[in-house]
Amino acid sequence: MTITAIALDDEPLALDVIKTFCDKVDFIDLKKTFTETGDALSYLETNKVDLLFLDINMPSISGIELFKKLDKSILVIFTTAYTEYAVEGFNLDAIDYLLKPFEFARFKKAVEKVKEYYHYLHKKESEAQQYLFVRVDYSLVKVALVDILYIEGLDNYFKIHFDNGKTLLVRMSLKSVTEKLPADEFIRVHRSFIVPLSKVKYLRNKTLNLGQTEIPIGTNYLENVRHLFTEK
Image (cartoon, rainbow, N blue to C red; front, side, top):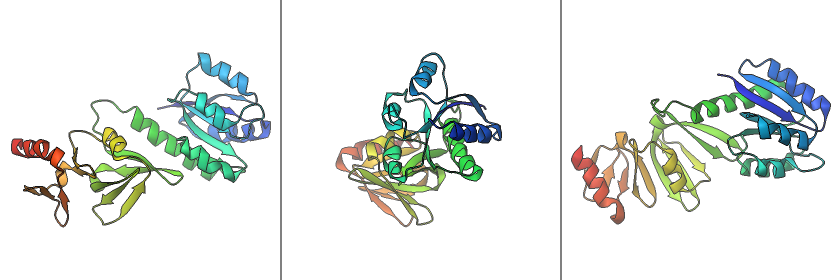
């Protein structure tokens, strides 16, 4: 698997660093580097790339504004010398944020995230989904589906409860995460709860038992849940 990439930065030395680091990574193919935003956009009009290393503090148009114009299939790693851009960068779903000057180890960590997420997006339809990628603070976190006990909705957030008792708070709606989960393995049973079918021990009245945890079934979901477990 090779991930094609370009880099845009108004500092040639910064581009040299990215090129040197890309040469050390066997799954990244850096096609071109650009110091002018217009040149990069022209290239993207006729060439498909998977990844863009993007400097936020560009002179003509900021990397943030450029990102909003890009095809959403392009994965982005922001690079900048200004820490204040981190929050906005991750609000735009960048894969990672590299603060200049960065060492190879930090660069490698960022592109490994790209590799995992790229594989997740391009997995074969016949391949069972094993992971969920969610954004926590300013990081893209990989969650193993098998470790999830249940998911609890909290307004515009949701909390993943794991078998080991740990939790993870994610800024995303329950509806959004439902669309990302395999429908044959997870079911929404309440306006505030999603459960993995494999963790359900039994159904009793309007409650699902998950061992030490009981999850209420919402009135609007009751018929569907009962039908599902009657079939089983």
